[in-house]
Each structure stands twice: as C-alpha cells, then as structure tokens.
Image 1: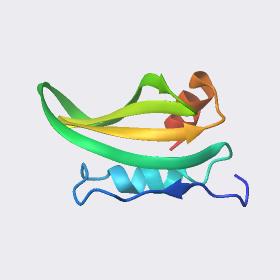
Image 2 (image 1 turned 30 degrees about the horizontal axis):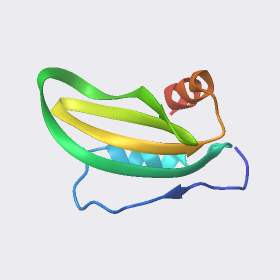
Image 3 (image 1 turned 90 degrees about the horizontal axis):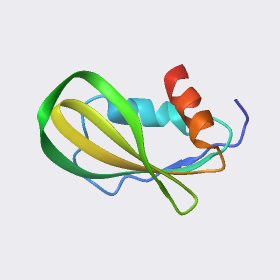
Length: 93
C-alpha cells in the first residue's frame, strides 16, 4: 500500500452496517481515487454476510453493489484499476 490515499465521500447519513469500515480500508490501496456510497434499497434475496460485487463500469471506475441481509447499497469507485484488479483488492480486505 502506498502513501497516496483515496478519498471516501460521505454524502448519505445511512450505510449498511460494516460497509464504512471496509471502504475505509479500500481507500488505502493504490489506484483507488474516490469511493462514494450511494442509494440504499431493499431486495427480495438474502445475503447472510456483507458482500461487495462489481456491477457495471462507470466513467473512470466501477459501480459496486454491497449486499447484506435484504439490503443493497450502491458504491461508486473511481479507480485506475481494471475490473479483475479491483476484485482482487476487495477480496484482500
């Protein structure tokens, strides 16, 4: 991990429990520039543990879905990493 640190943007008052801790670690990885948690929604399926999955590419990065229980939260990550590199980074946390 380098001395350069990404930025965690907190523009929502609510987050999935445990998500901010993971995102706080993620911003320390090289290539991660900005991490912005987004909208929280309810879903029908049930994820027993907090899990992050890359959803779609966005300009300059990726949209990631954080799932826990019946709740899903969008997370926008601006990064120079490829999809595979981001998956590897997330699994290291």
